Image (cartoon, rainbow, N blue to C red; front, side):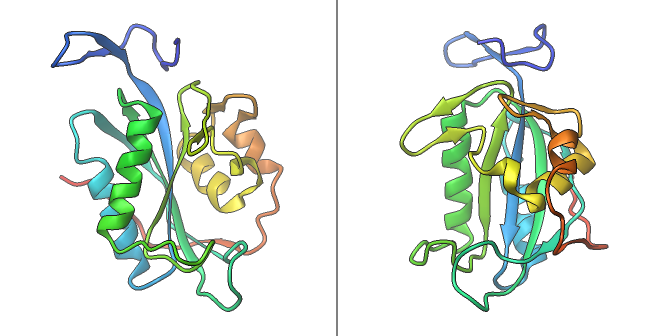
Length: 188
């Protein structure tokens, strides 16, 4: 795998001594239940609380209308978190799902309201198409609520098989996606 922004940057696995590439990774964060801003901040805090995840940027917060799911659910707050990491896509997905669960995410209603929704958008130039994990995220190119915030913080990221984030964001309908004044911060 040659999935690193800089092929000379690696991180040693402290248990085995193996070298693992450092990959630029993006997470989509969303919440439409409870204190949405607090849930997004909790996601940033929890996802970056690891020596294997180095925070790079977090987008401004956007508000967007729900896509799919039940009628009359509240609007989402959305953001994109960009990190550099040595973790595998599967480890990142498991970390995202455990973070969702820790903050009360339930999955009874498909595309229903949720305290926290975290998707792994892309992990360097890695591609995966397993039953429970697809990287890059299969619907990211259709989602203005993902691409617009992502373009704010990492416009030149090249999504494998799709192109640069800035180019993808210019091709989506951004109706109903509104930038807010609220900001998220990295833990100190």
